[in-house]
Each structure stands twice: as structure tokens, then as C-alpha cells.
Amino acid sequence: MKRVISIILCTVLVFCTVAPCVTANQENIPSFDWDGNPIIFIQGYSGPILIRDRGLETEEQIWGINAKDLIKKLASNLPGLISGLAKYHNGDTEPFVEKFREFSAELVDDISMMPDGSSKYNVVSYPTYVEEASVKYINEEKDGDYLPMTEGELIEAMAQTVPEDKIFIFNTDWRRSQIVNCEHLDEFIDSVLKYTGAKQVDIYALSHGGQLTATYLYYHGTNGKIDNVVMNSPAVRGTSLLMELLGDKPINFNLKELLHFGGVMLGTELDIRWATELLPAEFLNSLVKTVFNEVLLPHAIYFGSAWDFMDIETYTALRDVYLDPIENAAIIERADKMHFDCMANIDKGLKAAQAAGVNISIIAGYGTQMGTGKMVDSDYIIDTVSTTGAAAAPYGTTFAQKPKIYGGCTNEAHNHMSPTQAVDASGAYLPENTWFVYGLCHTQAKWDKYVLPLILELLLTDNIKDVHTDERYPQFDLSQCPLDGVYAKFTDSPSGTFTQDSTTLLIRNLSDNHKLTITAVTLNGEPLRTGEIIIDSGEEATVPCIPASDGKPQEITITFQRRGGFLSNEYSRTIYFSAA
Image (cartoon, rainbow, N blue to C red):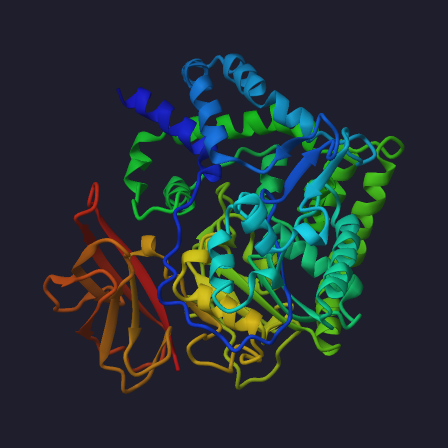
């Protein structure tokens, strides 16, 4: 039975990142004094819709995950996949690889690229034209079908302040190099300005879209067309996740983090980290790497975007392994420019755009191990260092002392060290304009009670100039999505800090659906005398708590149970505080 459950769970995990998400709670989102600029929304890697043979009888949507169709297709292939997994588990890898290749054959062929980096088929992104790219058009003419799947709730929140005909969805061909895509973006910005009569636009960009936006700012950021830019979890200098899959070393998933990430991606408060014991780790690691290398890699090596996701060192090492200098010359030319020009100097490019008047903000998750098990600080998908340019200690460790400042902020009055003592933002690309959220999973800002209003205020207004402007939004704070369970702060201090006079800890139940029972609270490993505390959904309770007087960072662990939920196991969350 354990083997059967393990195999089914592995099947689910292979596809969990494309599952639909529940709607975020929009009730407590404030309205803002909107600056009047049209908004351009730029999606992540898996979001943009691709259409083959647009305008012809053979027109077909080939990319843009439809959860219902995917589930239907998965269901029809599930017996074969599970059978293949069972044989894989016994050492025979070929049946599953072949079944997975069969399952994905049509999709993989449709999105294939030629050796020069051009599309194998006649493919365009959708919306293609500015007239069909507004949220108003998509809702009225397409029943909302082409709104971004992963961040649609964020657009709903924007639309509480900004008219839908002033919010535009920019989709580009995610397979191509960002060198090509940033020119496409420049053309789209021009079309939005002409269409709306506006002088400037604001940009919200997510993940791969954040890398595109950073590239655009590097090459075009001084052209005066942009006012506010918010990059959420941007893959500015790529991610080591892809590098780990491409490399010859085995991967080693942190299964607890994988299951937590899967729960967040599913948009549920169900914490399934208990299933770690059922999952054969070595089997899962081997499975993912085999599928990637044997089924997906032969196609992905012609994606310019795949090379953009590598750091300079890895790109230099793998370019001559996978790419032919003659057959793939066009791919190499663009990838060289991306790495040795843009990536190598991205901090200078962002600061030049900033000096030209662009208000740039970066929001990054940190404090989570990389999905492939590499010991780097990340938001599970993208390294903290790649996203922000900050210095980060290896995952699970801290800086023994403050690292040497290597650029950026040299103001000794500014504390750019995280409460965890694991991230120093003083040398980030933009140290005064980068926010770090501990425990925030990649792309999940849409239902985070701290991040969502921060994004909206940064994007729609000019109220927040930097990380020192508003104590509601300190540079380092905690993720506050329902699956996190609890949030805590000292009542007399901004979030994530304490003072010599701090005496009371406020604990908030983040759940939208369940009561929580707080069973224990510890301060620096020592238990506080609290007894059981029951907190209703969305409510708060206080606990007497006096930090140590030495001014060192404090560590508080809250142990809790969800009441009324399925499989109400006991969980804990550790929260770090710095001296104010």
C-alpha cells in the first residue's frame, strides 16, 4: 500500500505546478490614489498564451495551460503513467519515459524551436494587438479566459482602483531570448501610449517577466516611457534550478519544502508536509531528472529563454557542450549578449534607469531551500542572489559577522541585514528599493496579506520612495499567506523588530477558514508560559514576551494546530526579529 500511495503522489507532484489556484480574498484590499498611468502586466514563464497559425483555418492555441483540459488528458493517461511509474520504481525506466513522451508529444512538438532559435511553426503570442490586450476587452469579449492564470487575483485587486481598460496584458513568446523580447515589449509600450494617450506607463512583472523587464530597463530604461516598475520574484540573473537539472550531479529535493510549495500552488490551506514519509526521495529525484533530460532537454536547448536562465559561469561552461557554433550561431549571439552585456552589468543598468526617473521596486521571497535541494537561499524557484543581487549565506547558515559591503548602500545608519542574519542587502542591485519576504513561495504574492497591498501601493501610487518610507512595509518581513498559519510581531514595534521596552507579542491567525490552537511559544529555544490559546480565523491574541537585553536577533517559534481542517497535524513556524 505504501508503494501504491508513493507512486500516486509522485504522479501528482509531477503535475502539481499546473494546478488551478483558488481565488484570493479581496475583501480587505484598500483603494489607492492612482497616478493615472496605464498598467502593463507581464507574466512569468508559463503564463503567456501562444497561438499557432493565427487567422488561418488551422488556428490553434498551443500554450496557455487549461487546467480542465490538462486534468482530462492526465486522467485518460493516468493508468499508463502509474503503471510506468511502478516499473520505474523496480528499475525499468523506459516504460514511464515512453508514456510521458507520448503524453507530452503533441505539446512538445508544437512549441519546438529550430536550431537558430526561431519557431518551428507559425506561432504568435496572444493578445497580439493592443486593442485586444486590455482587461476590459478580455473580460467582455473573451469571458476572462485569457487573463493570467497564476496572478489573476492581483489583476482583480488592481481593478478595484484602476479602470479595466487601463490595465493591459503583455504576452510575448517565452521561448525566445530576452534580447528579442525586450524589443517586442518596447513596441507594445509605444502602442499602449498611443492607444491611451498617456505619457508614461507603469509595469508589474513576475518571475521570467521580471527578467524581461530588467533587460528592458537595461537597454531602454532612460527613454522616459516608464514611471513605476514593480518586479515580483524576478529571475534577473536566472536560477540555479535549471542549472541543477542540466548538470551531471544528482538532484536532492527537500521534500518538505516541495510539499509545502505544492500546497501553496494548489491554493489550499491543507499542509501536506506529513506525506514526506510516504515519498521515496531517491526515486522522485531520479524520476524528475530522467524525464527532463530524456524528454524535455532535446527541445529546451533551442529555447533562448533556457540559456537566459543560466548564470554567466554556467552558461559559459554549457554553451560549448550543447550548442554548435555554426548551426546554433544565432542562439549563441543573443545568449552572449544577454550574459556578457546585460547580466554582467544589470545593476548599472537599473541604477541608470532609476537616475532617469523610473521608480523601480523589487520584491523577493527568501529563507527557503532551492527546489532541487541545492543549499542556496531562494523562494524555492529562484535564488535570492539572482533575484536581488544581495549577499546570501548558504541555506541553513548565517553570516558569522556582517559581510564586507561590496557596493550599493554605504550608509552605516541603514541596517540591510535580515533578521535571520542570512541576507545582507547592502550590495543589492537596488538596496534601498528591494523588499525581502521570509518564507514567500515563488509567484504566490497574490494571496499574501503583506505583499499584495505593498505591490498595489508601489505600482499605483508614488507614496513609497524606498524601504525606509513606511514602517508598514519594512525591508524584511514575513510571508502572510493562509498556509503559513500564524504571523507575529511585538506590539510596540514595526514588523520584524523589537525594542528594549518590548513586552508583548501579538499572534495573528492567518487562516481564512480555520481556528488555530497555539500549543507552545518559545523565545530563543526557551518556552514561554502560555497554555493553549485558541484564535479564530483572522483574529489575534497576545502573549507576554520579553526579548533578551543584549540586542541580538531574537528567534520565536510558535507551535499550532488547525481546528476543523482535514488532517489537523501539529505545525510550527519560526519567526526572527532584529533590534529596532
